[in-house]
Image (tube, rainbow, N blue to C red; front, side):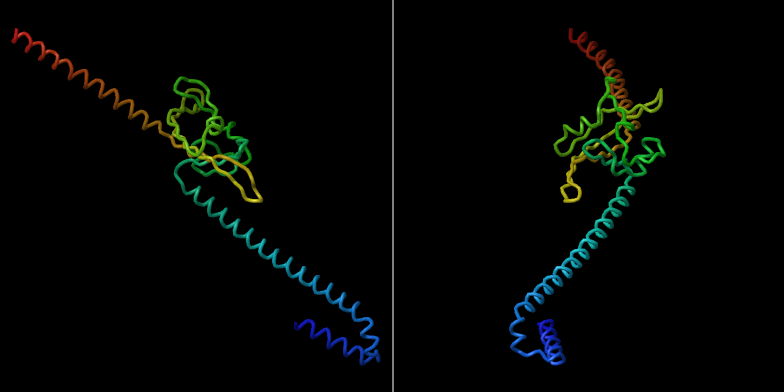
Length: 219
């Protein structure tokens, strides 16, 4: 290689200047070969380390870029999004989640149970993390209620997905929650059911009278 040729030329120049015979050179040649070999190995290690550091730096930059893209995508969603680890600690959230929870606090590294308390249609307390732990891949609930203040509440549609982070830097599991306020939709559903019930009752009365008249006429 070019490096070996340079070393040979340099040694030859040195020998000419200090009058070392070739016989003496051949005697110390094994030691010189060892020094040259060690030098080449060290050069290769240093160059390899630099290359690895450069690749690692590029991967870190790429991960940061992807993370920023993910944050931008989550913040652009109209649904409230909350990502938590397996212990329920919030890792990612968007502005819609802050609006839904009616808070200006930083939710990162907080436990989701401190902000979301749920009840079912019977008024029983429901643990969101327990529901998530029972989720295999995806699940949806539309029968849960979140109290707001002392006298108010909202109906929620909650979509739960189990996530798994298996990269060497973050090997853990977690969950992603998408929450949507469906209080108005629930009210419309109730009103529609009441309307159908009233109309059915009102229609049933004249039909029954008509059936009675027909029966009397036939009799």
